[in-house]
Image (cartoon, rainbow, N blue to C red; front, side, top):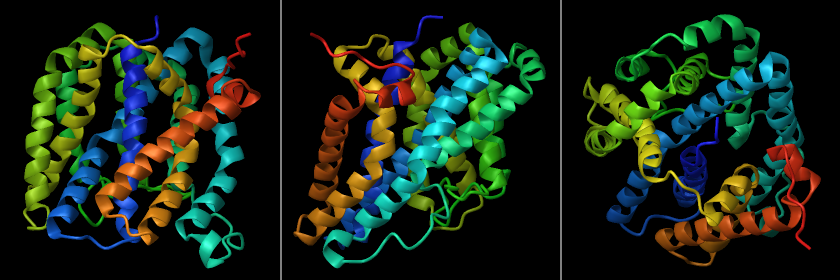
Length: 348
């Protein structure tokens, strides 16, 4: 299978949106809203990005996990996943927990010690933790799962099933009524189940590409339109306590996840050099972006920048520093082999 540039483009874009998401979700830890309108705009932004960003990552992960399993076999698949996911998680976990604590508290100015508390969760690396658990299941039950994955499964029915089941799974919603995040070493079972089902949909898409990828391409605009409508309705009524609110949100999650991927499959089928570079750098940027986000949110906040300016500057500076450090310290070194399975030699 030729690597799908559209999914690489999707992964790179979702990563960049992740930086914007974290800048917007944490900005009010450091400054007060200047107006109700500004506050609602920022909340709309981070809740909207949260609807589809992480679920779409799990679809892509399931797609390529199934590809690796079929092309390399169970044992080489497991070795690859341990090297590319479990090992980076173990190496970066504790340093990044401390870095997040240090930067989020502005310890370089406040003098607060952030090195006296052992990490009790995975922080933003929870995605890697979930992913390695899913890959272990895929490896352990590779034979029966492969038999199931090749059986025709209608994407229409699967998406309807996910939308109907999501509100019924315990633990998938936070206090705001949006998708929860489980960063603990002992993850929330409900959230684990939800993301595993979404991960499996990616594996289904790989095994039934003609059916699933065609569906996503042809229904992309319709699904994205449903996302915009359903999420806006949810945003307006989320605090009203209505019975159907969770199902409206579930519709926005499912339509957004698969609609956004469909847009890339339909309109972003080629990859230019810039996006290829960002795609290569995405793993590194994912690992290091949150301490940078905290650093700039704190620094800009105490210097009187408004929330909108702080979010935009934080996002741009974080991405630029992440890409530069990838180019200088990662791309041509053994770290690239650790994260991406290959390194890029320096051109003479």
